[in-house]
Amino acid sequence: MEDTQPKDFKRSLPPPPLAKQLQQMLRFSGSNWFTKPHSRRKGGKKVKVTFSDQLETDSSGSSGSVPTTPNSSAQHRWRYLEHVFRPSGRSGTSPAATPQFERSSSLRQSNTSYGSSVSSGGPYNRRPPVQRKVGQKMADCEKEEALNLQVEFEWVLHEEVHSVLKQLHVILVECAHRFPVPLYHNEGKKQDKFVLTAAPEQLKCVVTLTGDSITHADINFKVQRQQQQIQRTSITQDYPWKIQQVQDAANHLQQAINHIDNVDSAYHFKTSDEVLHILGNILGALQRGRTSLVVPRKKPIDELMKSRNMKALSPNLPEDLAISFYIQSHKLIFVAYQLTNFQGTMKFDSCQAECSVPWLNEVLVLFTVALQLCQQLKDKISVFSQYKDFTVGSRSPSALSY
Image (tube, rainbow, N blue to C red):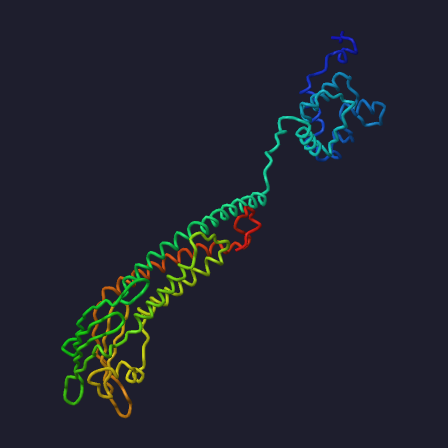
């Protein structure tokens, strides 16, 4: 049959849908449409592929170009590509006003269009909240901490220091009243009687302790010689045995109380150095007083035999015998020494007896409590003294000066 349709029948048909046209273009160009434009071949013929906007501008172009299509189909394709590769906010622009879409820079143009949509206004234009720099936050925290330390430091200087000094004064006065010697309005002269023995009947001593002296003592101890014999001697009230440790501890305690009395209750401390100086003096006096009772000073045997106390014994002991009374912690200790000559070398043997003294135990407890309280306050002030930029009365952290 003859074809009765007119020759231009195919041209008068409406253009195929846009999706089919894109499929034809992609099928025509091959899989390397965007990556290798120079390798697009079909039937061994070199083909130049461009978009419709380029076809319109180059309609009078060179050989090898794709035949032009109607303007309506070109506009449809351009709008579809513009809808895919450009944000919706710019879909209303005309093809002539937009730049050409080159195949070699498609990815770069898509990224650029995304960035322009964010900056010009779109669904991704949410700016992150303004955050302060970490350094600025740390600086603000340090300033706030410095101000809090300044307030607490002033409170410690004006309130807590005087409160602790009052507590210390009460404790030390109570300790002074325990001493058997005249000390801080205390008459002293307290008298105690003790019996010291060492088994098996090696030593027996009955002493009367009055204040810091042994006013009476009956002493009996065995002497290890060729024949065991008992040595007897005594201490009389005319020549008492002086225990210097008690008087030394009382003197140091009096110094500590005087340091507290010298501080006016209405005085306002301005720097930590003032407080640390006073607390250092108090601590030093208390430590010396407690040490004099806990750690007695050891005397050489020669010094002991030549001491004034040995000459006060009645009757006097032989040259190879010596005795000693001293305090260690809360105990009164009596020791008898005997010198021996062994192959030209002088050695000594000793025998010891001890007893507990009640008032010494109370004194040491009060000394310890006062030392702990004073040391705690000193440690607290020392913490503030590490900050060298504060001054009392200033709320600026850049002005701490101790």
